[in-house]
Image 1 (cartoon, rainbow, N blue to C red):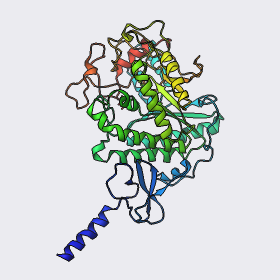
Image 2 (cartoon, protein in one colour):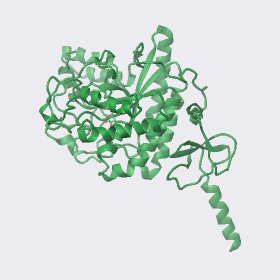
Image 3 (tube, protein in one colour):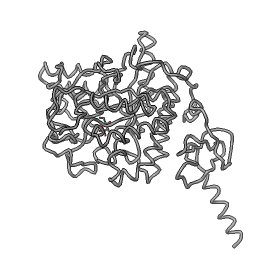
Length: 447
Ligand code: BGC
């Protein structure tokens, strides 16, 4: 009996040790605080300690990582040297002086789409979209290696042309993603190791980026996530996700800052957080996250209107804005920026205008799914006419779907069957040819 008990105790010690890159501590962590041989339990932030390669340790006292740069050791490849040019960010607008790298993924989608158009005028206009920069969405961990390919490509373009290259990415893989909707539910769940999976996803991104310290990277951080924490905590899935979202976003901010990525946290849009009742709690949360991210100057600010349809400057308020004084993105940003600045977050903005060419096409401001009659909008430019706005950008790759209208899909969201939603629509993120063609034909300015 005694021997049996001793054996059980031995087995439990052996199996309890966290694996390399596994979690070994942090607020709410109830698992093992020791690591397998060859790894050291290292505090990355209050929410997460991780077994990183290093001197063999079975200590239950995690080692604290004090400077953000040392967190680059969290890279899972260890094949590259630490970045040298990113200790302090360049002053001013990170888009200035850079050529935006064109996503080969989107270029391929556009080439296929244009190939399916017979009308020669429309075909030429459609093909021209491939020259307008969009963001690359890293919406699954399987897409992260593509980032390495693009960075290598951008690096060689930069070396051969002398034009400095900027790669635009969206990090979008939180566990229990899209907690208040269904259309974009992701691959990780909180109940099934989601936080550790997310940290691993982020480590893989960082490992790619640190190999190319000469290429500038701009990232939008987790569309909808923090906005859902401002207004949707009455939704059980969002309430359950709050701690994990904050831990993961904090980790993203710190890790990406450590390799010199210029970051804009997603801030919803005027018709979401721009309401008078929401804007102040939103400012509080964004400032908290900025501080949780170490107040790094690489946390440049916020991205608004991502994948949405609002005007930057509306000629007149769309009737659906129902008296909100912040009836377009300019008003929203002009109201939010000073609130952030006064709380210590000197935030700058980028604004998605990719599908905002046509206005007054929605039944309600909250409608977001494949809005009928939308057109491509103002082209990306740093000539924004607003000192808070670094650049107008195209974050959502126009033509990729917002969500399926198939009611039997597990990711079916009824918003995608509303009368202002174009149907039938395929799964979120997949190509929606008919929708793309409308975006092209209704583009404003025209193509
Ligand atoms: C989808 C993602 C996609 C992104 C850009 C989101 O709605 O869920 O899979 O990458 O849109 O199209």
